[in-house]
Length: 94
Image 1 (cartoon, rainbow, N blue to C red):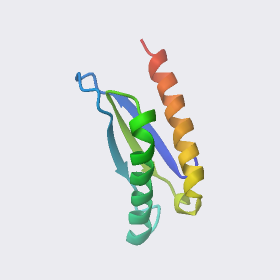
Image 2 (cartoon, one colour):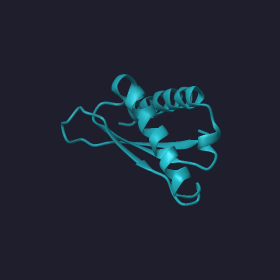
Image 3 (cartoon, rainbow, N blue to C red):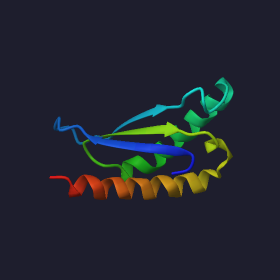
Image 4 (tube, rainbow, N blue to C red):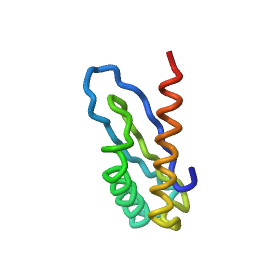
């Protein structure tokens, strides 16, 4: 996805709450830019994970360069589609 990368891993610990983590490297920009990107990723996760997140899995959002330039609503659509693809891939694994 442009703007971020989503990694999802099933925990197998019996807890159905989805976990979430964020990372934005120095390649994205200076501290102000990285913090803005993390705030946007947190807001996206707060909105999408309760209903679209995968139960019992850890979700990691990695900010990419240019992610702050993308419209917030468009990033939300990208996250929804990435979550659907991740759910499909995890369901296909034995």
